[in-house]
Amino acid sequence: MEQYGRCVAASPTSWQTDCHSLRLSMSRPIVQQIRERCAEPFAAFEQCLKENQASVLNCSEHVNAFLRCAERVKVPA
Image 1 (tube, rainbow, N blue to C red):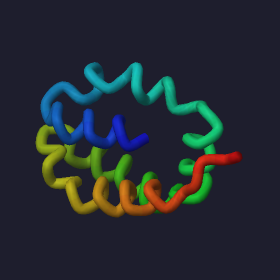
Image 2 (image 1 turned 90 degrees about the horizontal axis):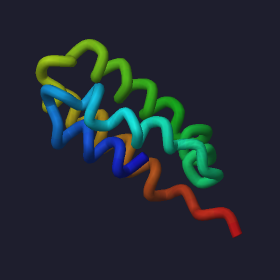
Image 3 (image 1 turned 120 degrees about the horizontal axis):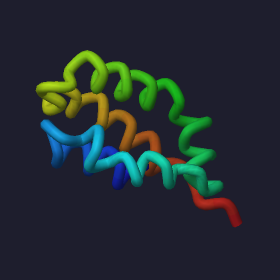
Image 4 (image 1 turned 90 degrees about the vertical axis):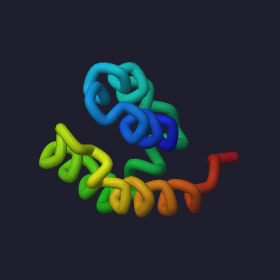
């Protein structure tokens, strides 16, 4: 998830294609936990991306909120 967020931020004009494989790879257990626990900031981030496709830099606050949440999720033992 963190890599996906960084990819989107680094590819403001082509994130839809450049980051597609990262989005598909988000099915591992830790990613699923992050998706569950950070659903709200992730949804806000995705909504911002949809609304700002031409200028994803407008979503930096949303991606930072999501990344802060994701960092708090612990890897399952």
